[in-house]
Length: 439
Ligand code: CAO
View 1 (cartoon, rainbow, N blue to C red):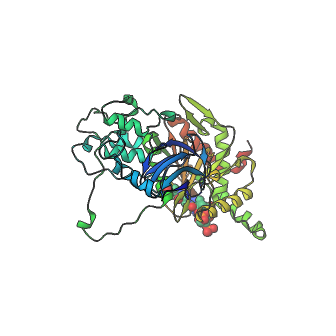
View 2: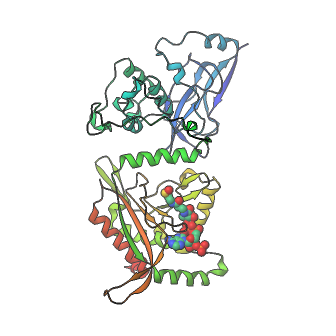
View 3: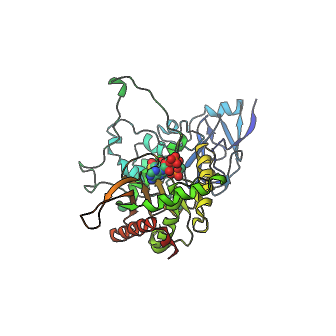
C-alpha cells in the first residue's frame, strides 16, 4: 500500500535559517534512502539533506533561496508498494553510469568533508586536487565529480554565484559545459598536466605498518578544517613577529584583580589585548576590513573574535563592539562565550561578524606561530606565553622585562610588510603603556 510522508530537515546542529542553494530532485523522481535531496549553505558549511527512505517525490515544498531550519518540510515522498515498484524502475535516461552510486550517504549534519579521492586510476590521476578543493560545489556534487572522474576546477558553475551544480558535472562528463577560466584553476605554474602538478592525496594502508585505530573527525573539526584549508590556500599569508614589554601591564593586571576580587571577575591578559587591538585597528583601518571583489570594505565597527580551544575543536566566538566595552565587561563576556563554545552551545550569530581575531596560546606555551587568517578578515594576531627577557637600551646595563611574543598574519593582497610592522609596533607600544590608548 502506498503512503505519503513529509520529509523534514533533520538535526543540523546549531544552524537555523540556512538558505537552500540547490535542489537535486524533481516531482516524479525516484530516490533511494540516503540520496541527497537538497543542499543548504550557511557561511560556515554546506550541508546536503539526504532522503531518510526510498520513495517517489510527489511534491517539492521549497525553492532555492528559502531559509530552512531543523523540522522545515523539504518535500513529500510516496513510499510503499507504488514507490517500491518505481524504485526498481530503470534510472532516468540522463543518469550517467555510476551516477547512482555517486549519491551515496551523506551525513545530515554539516557534511563539509568530501570523500577521499580514489586511488590514482588512469581516469582520476588527471584531477588537479588543489583546483578541485577550491571549486565552489557542495558535497554531493563533489562526490559525483569523483565518481565521474571530472576535474571540478575545470568547470564554470551555472548555479547561484557561480556554484557548480549536478547538471554542470554531468554535462562536463559528457564532453560539454563551459570550462572555468584559467585563473580559477589553482594549478601549479607548470600547468597543463606538467610533471609538477599537485598529486592526489596518498592513500596508504597504515595497518600494514602497525596497529591503528580509526576516529572520525568531529563536526566542528570538519567545518573548521574546510574553512582553514580554504583560507590557507586562497589567502597569500605573511606572518610578522614582534614582542611587547608587558611588565607594567602585568603589574597593573595583578593589582586590578586584587581590587576586583570580591566581584568575582578575574582578568587575564587577553581583554587588554582586545582593547589594544581595537585602538590599533582604529589607527590602521585596512586591518579592520574585508576584500569584496576589487574593493576593500572598511568597517566602522570593532567586533573582535578570539580563538577558543574546545574538546570538539577550534571555535572563534566574537566580542561585538569591543570598543564600547570595559576590560571587566569583555572579561565577563569572554568567559561566557568560551563556556558556551566548550559546551557546544555557541549560536551561529555569536561567531559571526568578526572584523579581526586574536588567537592566544599564552595560557599554554610556545614562542611564535603562524595563525591562519579567519576569512573574510584580513589579519589575525597570534600571541604566545610571556617570558622574562634580558633587555638593554645601551648595551651595558640589563634589566629583566616580561615579554609577550606576537605573531601577526596578514593578507598580502590588502596589506604590505611595512604596514604590518607598524601595526605590531603600535600594538606593542599600547601594551607597554595602556595610557596610550587614550591618544
Ligand atoms: N602569557 C603568560 N600567561 C598567560 C598568557 C600569556 N600570554 N595568557 C594567559 N596566561 C595565563 C592566564 O593569566 C592564566 O593564568 P592563571 O591561571 O594563573 O590566572 C592561564 O594562563 C590560563 O589562561 P586562560 O587560557 O584560561 O585565559 P585567557 O583569557 O588567556 O584565554 C581562551 C581564554 C578562551 C582564549 C583560552 O582558554 C583558549 O582557549 N586558548 C586557546 C586558543 C587557541 O587554541 N588558539 C590556537 C588557534 S590555532 O589552532
